[in-house]
Structures are given as C-alpha cells and as structure tokens.
Image (cartoon, rainbow, N blue to C red; front, side, top):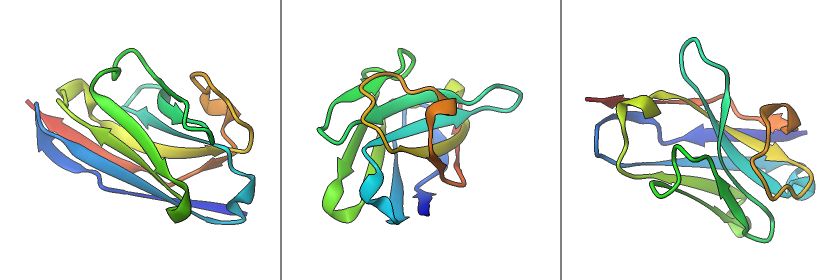
Length: 124
C-alpha cells in the first residue's frame, strides 16, 4: 500500500506564494509519476501538474509559468511551488501517485493513489 500526505496549504493574498509538499510512504518503489490536482467547490477535480521519474513535467494552461512541480526522490517527496497566486487558484489541492510513467496531463481517473488534500485559499 502507498500513502501520500500533503502539507503546506493555507491562506494567502493574491500575488503571494505557497509551497505544497507531498510525502510518499509505504510500498512506493512502484511509483513513477507524481502529480498535483485541485478541486474547487462545486467543480470537478482537475489536473494541475505532473512529473515523471525522469523529471519530465507537464502543466495545465491555467498554471503554466506560475507553478513549478519538482521531486526529491531520495526524500520520496514531491513539491508544488505556487507563485503569483490568484483567487481562482482557491481549491483543495491533492497529491496523486501513478505507477506508470505518464508524460502528459494525467487524468484523475488514471491516478492509482491519492492524498487527503490540503486547502489553499487566495484572497483578493
């Protein structure tokens, strides 16, 4: 079993920054792709960013140029640096782990393991 634990969410003013972390534990040797998703109230969960085992990254158009995904394999941790945050970035952010290497915008239904989520609120 694989366990994911997110941290780093909070309240920030528009234009500010936050850095989310996702720690992977358990039988994680099978994990190749790590990704971030978000879900705003009344909306479907949507893809934000992903990174493969080789370091290839993909971003949704809405965050491209503002968010950066990275991973430290030795720490089994993936990060999401979020800069120039906007009120429309407000959502619960989820970490997802996928056993295959997927070098594209990974759909939520393709995720094998999920974290519990962390709230990000951006005030105007």
